[in-house]
Image (cartoon, rainbow, N blue to C red):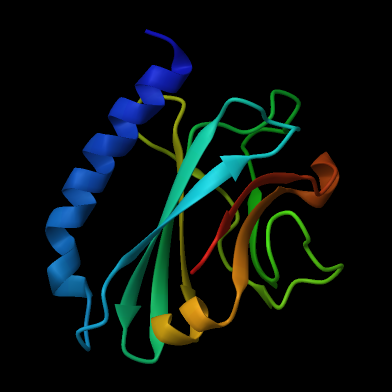
Amino acid sequence: MNASARMRITLATTLTIFGACLPIAASGGAPIQTVALKASRSDPGRTGQAILVPRGAVTDIAVWFSSVPNDTTLPAHVYTYLYKGTCNALPGTAAIALNRRVLVSQIWSSEAFRLTHTVQMPIDALRQGGFALVLRTAPADGNRVIYCGEVS
């Protein structure tokens, strides 16, 4: 089984487990949102997904992705940002940096990775704000965009 197939199975299993807990985590009646993360040219053929879980005035973000570029320093550090704009037209500066945690956790024994964040903004503001969720390599690894997905 190739890495992409393992990622799809791992991601589906993780989302199923995580999804079973979502009604407890979500509050205020706002629906949970998934954001597909597309791999950049620096890590082609990879997959990722984020789940945004409303919790009143804040939104929890759980991110899963299949890999980091082969030349990434290990243990991998991945930086997460919200940009005002689209993945095809990112502005020069991020609107929000979500980098309290940058050391990724490896899911089980697969090649899949996970990060979790909380943004100090309700989910409706994220949806209406025209944000792109961007994952970047560490500055030591070139600060390259490796995944991007649009929140809508």
